[in-house]
Structure formats: C-alpha cells, structure tokens
Image (cartoon, rainbow, N blue to C red):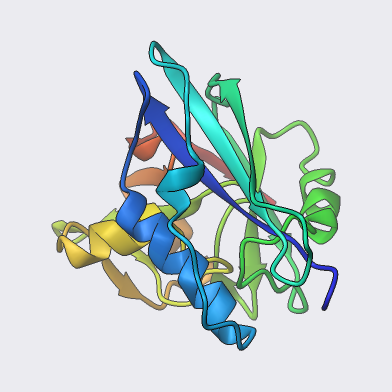
Length: 197
C-alpha cells in the first residue's frame, strides 16, 4: 500500500536508545521488501530526553515526502496476569505497521483479561503488544510463526536464550512459566498468567 506507514518502538534510558542494530535491521527489511534501496540511519532521528525511561515512537512512511517523525513518552508498563485466547486464522501483522485496527478489534474481545493471546490455525502466535515464550524441558521456547518477528525476540534467538518451535494451543497448560518479550519490557517472566477461553 502506497500510503502505509510503519513504526519502531525503541526503549530509551537516560537519552540512550537501546538495541538500535535490531531496529535498524527491521526498518531496512521493510524498505527492501517495498523495493526501496536507499535507507537512512534511524539513530540520527533520535534526540531523546537525557534523564529517565522513555518509549520512543519512530514513524516512517516510505512512499511519502514526510520525514521520519519521533515522539517520546514516559513509559508505564502494562501489567499482564491474564490472557484471553482468541482464535483467528486470517489475522496478519508481519510488518510493524501503524495500521493496527485488526489487532485492536481482537484486543477489544479480551473480556476483562489484561490482553489476548492470538491463536492461528491452532498454533500460538503473540499477544497484541508482545511476543511470548514458555519454559519447557529446561529451555525457553517461542512460537516459530509469530505474527510479528519482534526485535527482542530476534536478539534473544541470536543470543541462544530462546529457541523457536511450533507451539500448539493444546500445550498451553503444560508449561510451568510464561514470559513476554518486547522492546520496552525486554524479557519479562510473569509471576502468574491465566489463560482463559
């Protein structure tokens, strides 16, 4: 889509953006998929507050004349203790697009839970804001086919801290621990997490 825009969510601590190599890599991957060969350096667009923890939202529209825009928001973590299982075989969100309406619709079906866990073709994918991992047989595993290949997920795979595998919805109650992964929370092991149907 020619009018589509994309974004990166970047964790900034005391003015320093974290893990920029992974954000840059994903940004370049989006542009290359669109046939755009000239790419900029995202770090040049970041001028964050020098004190505190911030969420930097960096938005770019590849086919627009508009420059990359950045905004900064003091970060407040969303607590997650329960996930509503939502079954949807059509949902697709392979690139971090600002067009999140379909995810928002699924989130609205959470029925009092903190977020939803999206099940596609009976396989576990993601929540609306994070990749997910489960502790199994001495290692952390994450879905092989997530909706979005998050930057934290990619980094932890590279570091060998998690491994990817197909996770069936029928396996959920067999895991002893659950963790959420995204740029802001990094790898957060949940103290408790209920899965509700």
